[in-house]
Image 1 (cartoon, helix red, strand yellow):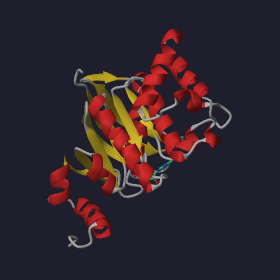
Image 2 (spheres, protein in one colour; image 1 turned 180 degrees about the vertical axis):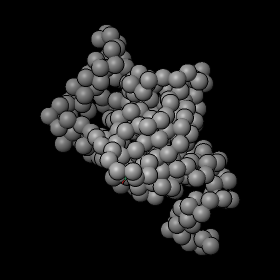
Image 3 (cartoon, protein in one colour; image 1 turned 45 degrees about the vertical axis):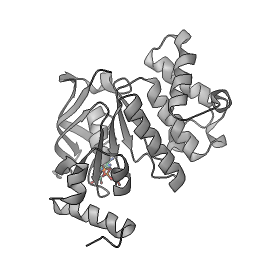
Length: 261
Ligand SMILES: Nc1ncnc2c1ncn2[C@@H]1O[C@H](COP(=O)(O)OP(=O)(O)OP(=O)(O)O)[C@@H](O)[C@H]1O
């Protein structure tokens, strides 16, 4: 497994109209194979805009003023990286699927778009579904989204992401709409993929429990800027920035009230 590296350099995103402050400003992040980097911060701090800006899939009315995406040190156009070097999974998986298409059609459309030769499709689908923890692939491939639970749909979204064989994954709040047991299973699945496939994962979350469970490093955002970056142990035990301290304190007061300050 060759080590890979993804860099987002000096990313600034603005909203059209008016002289408002940038939505995100001067973001620098790097992600390596087999690593989980958590991007945390309060709602509206700019986590999703950072992912969308890096891949140039910003919503209408917003634009990327500066920013370079580098794969293994080489600057790349985001459109050549999206879905090929960086796969994505989102929260609310149900809304990501076409309600009238079966899972097989979703898988086939994905593989067609990626340009994989048809004779390889069955093997790629089987391997991705197994790695995403979906047993009985033939039964699941015949299902429509309404016939599946939220957890199964999130696993299917992970399987579709794995089909690209991309070395990196952006996971934006991947467990937000799921119950606690399914959340835990999805986090285990991501952890296994990082170890077994060497996937580098940018994990967007506001849940410090998810961070503690999965992340190696943490980048903290406030008002569109990264205010602190560090390894997981230091961030939890010696948070330097007030925003990081607030996130950690809020987490401890919810889940470990006896040790909270
Ligand atoms: N389509 C849009 N047009 C203009 N501004 C937007 C748009 N979407 C988001 N914003 C603004 O961009 C900023 C960053 O939003 P973003 O969605 O990246 O935050 P976030 O940290 O991902 O929040 P959350 O945790 O709630 O998803 C916020 O000020 C938000 O109001």
